Image 1: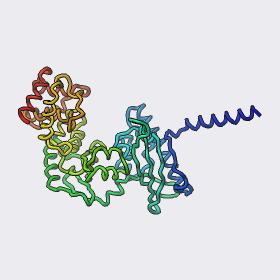
Image 2 (image 1 turned 30 degrees about the horizontal axis):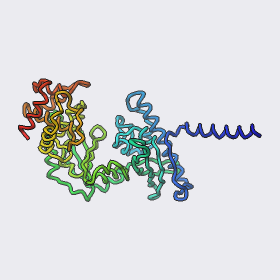
Image 3 (image 1 turned 180 degrees about the horizontal axis):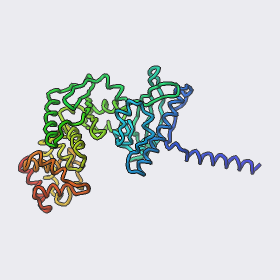
Length: 403
């Protein structure tokens, strides 16, 4: 009898151990079946689709870590509708698949798809359109922090053929559009689009394209929304903690995907060229340094704040913090109480000094003179004839004189 009981206990323990080490990396919990119809064929098929997809995302990610690149034979991308793969799934994008949520927040699958999940359910919208809704949690900075509530449209082609679809593609037919050469603005009908500002922005961009010797820049689609809530909803994000970092629903945010082919911005994005300048720089040849952010902020604006306001605030802040020595380092100071991006603002000062010396062309020439791994700041200082020990006084004196 004892031997029989022991064998039963051993079987249970082994079962639990193997269950924890199975192929499904995600710790998913289903809601109470009382509230969820789990008996339908569509539900079972979509649940299997979702679990298989998460496994493939993880596998693709592991391969990319080994190869240090996106695998051209991505398995996860095959779960998406062909039109989505063509539009959002270019190889080289994050994970190489059309999952706009994953790519927008630049999360690794280990942080998102492989995190704790509460699967909410599947809703049938019509005979061919379903929506899967789920939520994820992570353990940073504390345990069980909400990562987001997420909705994925699913297209049913047959009993055995379901494909993921992006929320943005479902919404896009309802958007208005405004085209200027290679640039197309897309926005909801309720958005108060400023055509005059868009034309001024495009004129600036044309001048930068000419400086970079880009005769016909690649086409770019620029999506505009009134606030972050609408922005996130367009990506299938029903709730995101990033939407609750301030008391204003118009908190400005920009985003660039697919090496500059797709852009997003909140209200008044048509007045800013910042992200679009990034697009042109990448087309000419991506050589990202912090100076690129300063250059894009100086010529294209940053967070709906004029450069005069940003640099005036920087002057005041530096004057209130005389202990900061810019000759030692530009990026390691405690700037948590600065009103805008400290590093961007400092590089805006450098860009303005360069612009006054040799114009826009000199600024872009210096950007492309910075080699990979090279200390971009001191390369810039070299072009202006600075000595490292004098940089702190030079920047402070310039700001105090001009702002």
